[in-house]
Length: 442
Image 1 (cartoon, rainbow, N blue to C red):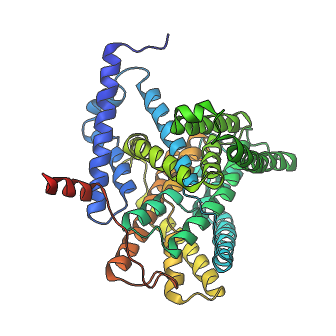
Image 2: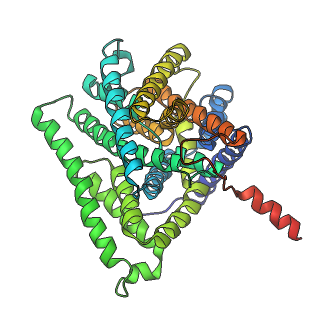
Image 3: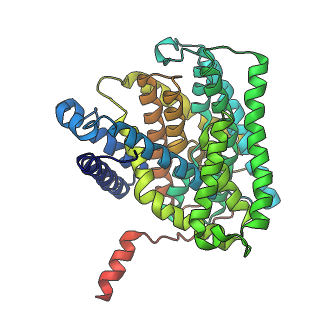
């Protein structure tokens, strides 16, 4: 009933192993040339997918990834697990403690980087023909929302990974950027939930539909945040909580799966549940416990399921037959300039200097993981077609590349990120450092 044949298991493990190894290999090589690791992981899917392997050796690609009837569904399952864990890890990066000045800057950036960019993206969708970009849902309103979100969205996981890799996560700059990304992405996920809701209703849109979708999303977020905070605070670290005592990480994964399931049953995107579970764990638990959870889930996720998720995104792309480079370049320039200018002007309004404002503009322009999640969800829901899916994924990758490279230059030059980070000392210690230290002790 719940079994695969020995040949199917062996075949799937071979395909998954090849994909995972390629993701880690290209991710490592990307970091060596100062490119965010996520770009290398998606590139693994491009190499082994329809873009390269499927183009030159189509029979080999089909044998490896479509070798038996349910293989694609197994990769789909790992893809969903990786997506949930990515959002859970993003929630665990959420920042909550600010002084008054930092709170003021963060609030201004949330407003300034979300509303103007979203509005510009919304009206820009009216300037070109979006019909060729629509998916099977054939819903113009839904795709306009997706376009607006793609302009305004920011990446918590990728920008956090860049900060960690550079050893600057402890800086004031990183704290403000991660908080800004977390808050306004939650708002944009609500918009995404609304887009997927109306796309599943065969294009039927009424004020009642809009209010119900947005109300359910906000109700779920606020309700789970408040109730989850109270329950986590009171019921997690007590003797009677046998599940927590038996396995701390297993307990939080259980919470994540339950909230994701609840979100799905309420017709809210399941990623909401995983994100809220991570945020609640971050804000409600003692720092030592939340950091231990973050460390434990990160080791599992970033070693296996999250690289598989990003590589599987690459597997779905066919840049040979379903990609328009000229349209992509135009869309990239438009999205980058819109978001960067909006953040720059907002930062100057709260009296930050030009260099700090430019740094914030580039960092908040990083679409990374959420940009890929946006494209994945919209493509799965039939809102966008494969061509626009490829455009949005490439937009997320390139806008992760730009701030990653720029911030590395700043750190290497010893320049100041923003006022308060004048005496910044990068805190870096990666796996390669550990290997070197082990070799020295031999």
